[in-house]
Image (tube, rainbow, N blue to C red; front, side):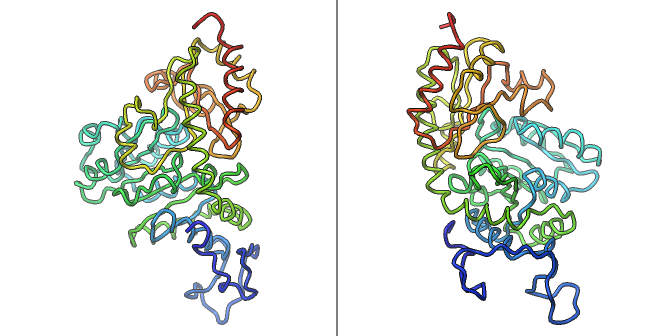
Length: 384
């Protein structure tokens, strides 16, 4: 599907095997009409290159509709516009820092109430539901502590109250390893910047749904908010998707080998990876996922001093935010991606000064392990 869905050469007059990049902002019409059916009108409202990418992502998500946005954050903002004043949203407590900031500050200013819970315990969702609850926001695995939520069980509980929309941020798994819509969720949202594009050269988000009414709302929001990706970025995404299966299998292989290596290193306190049997949500992962991405988190022995030394000694791994590209990255959530949280909140969630998140890329895994080994050996002295 990633290779063929939406890619038919017959849709172009020239018969191009590779979808064209349509840069035009406006399109000639056959007759005067504000929105001619089946015709492109204005590029903010619809663009041929974007359509190709949307059809491809929709197929991968097993969705009826997919809408692309200028970033993962823009996709999230569009979903939040589905809510209205007085509504209540339940959110997984351990989510990307940008999501946390948006829910706490922007959404609550619109008189939308937000409650954060550990959704790995389904009873917490049950307890948090109110008469005005309209959305359950899940992230699984979570960023950065890699908790795994049972999507099927969480959706079943949420849907006991009519009108609740279950949104799953599927960024860490990609459509290749996890399909939230098949597990009962109403919305699968992704930062396509990450694994789906896979080349660290596009910023984009997607929202995929099957419900006709919700799909209509999102199409309106995409056009009216104007938070759309460029045709060239859509072309790059579509191109990146062609190697999704190959990339994800290698990310998984490398990620598991690195995680197992770190488990056996005395300079490491603890390793978190959903594919390790000692992960607290391992059974849920095995039930709902087809595999695992290249995300690995771990606690280095020591504190901020050892952590900073570790980063300085790395050679192949780059100290940078983001994830899911072909290159390996390392970052410190406490001071980089999750500064929107208070220190108390970070500590409660386990984001200490020695908690490190890795995005394992596509390099030779022996080279990656050698790089981690030499950095750990230099950074942690006399603590193991």
